[in-house]
Length: 294
Length: 249
Image 1: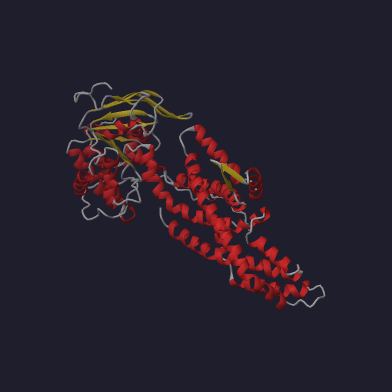
Image 2: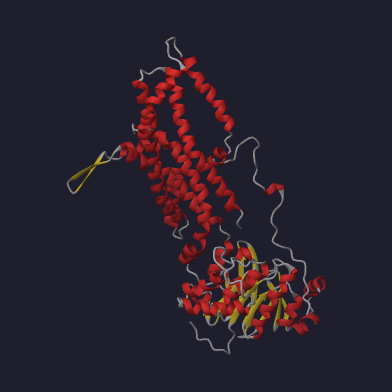
């Protein structure tokens, strides 16, 4: 038997250029990790020249040379790395852990069916997503007590823990948006198919929607980890003993020669770059890999 | 819930109104479907066919009138939607298979999660269903690895796994390549011959003519004309029906 096939006006995918998002030429729309992963080695080469040249220009007439400046830095490298940079990593890991847990809860709250919860989670997300990180950090530092008493025991809260808490708030808000965005990006047909199979909303969310979201959330999540790591020097303003704080201390110990400024801070910069660059590369790789689906 | 007996229509629509905002999509639709009957709803695009069929498993709410499915009143605010959807299976134009699950997992999910049936039993039934839709050997393929026609047949099997009493087909071949349309239609025909109550929105006139017990032609939110296929295609009286048929036949 022969079936007749008629022309069907398919639900048109829009190819009209007017419907496409307007892109302003010259403005980068790359995420931090996308930008970082495209970092050209030439930029490093170009940067190295002024770094080495700095002590010569900054030389205020003493006998301080590039060589002495870098010898001074070399002396402090173990102290800066082990005492400082590893602490930055520790802060970033803890802040990411708490931020992710709280953000996941907040993000699910944003798609709750209860109006009040949805609005509250939306408000918290927007509040912490759009506030300056440093302001949040200062509020947390000054608002939290430096010690708490539980059952007669005095437990002191070190500054770095407050910093972790303070940094985890903006991370939480951005993870919340990632979760919400990922859920919304799952085609509506998936919800309808689950509904028509008599799945409850909870079952649909946990068995159908979230498993599909998971992959899409990883690249933006890693992007935020890179941003967070690079934001950890903010803690130095709170007196947390991380790499920038220690760099300042080390330079003071070296009699505050202005020649030291660029070598020391460039060292910190280099450490952050070495740490974040592989993350960025891997994030972009995952982005490409996951974007093929659907 | 009112008691339902097989002598009553299994799906009954009475003066159904539906609007999206100010746009009226359905303007008083009335018809009955008896158990085992196969009906086809045809009509031009935008005439409300899909909306109509989506109202029957409460994916869309209606603003006026009444829909009864096996005695269950869909306009009842205390309607047990889950109970309703156990009775009504639905197949979509875009298949909507769960992309992270294999074909057989797609089929097994609802009976194990919703009906809480034993996994072993469900697997045995799912394997039978795979055979029924002629997809032996594709049990462990993911939807992305299957052709459109194969995906649509998995979707049909997935709905059947819930043992529904009514099957709704919403333009299930519209997104398919012409050469895979047939395999899906054959599957639906098998179902119809087994006595499954089927409601199809379709553009496949030849198929509708062959399979349907009753054809409804909708335009602009109302049923313009209806009848058994033999008379419907040859003796359409309304000018709108005639125009539609002349364009596609």
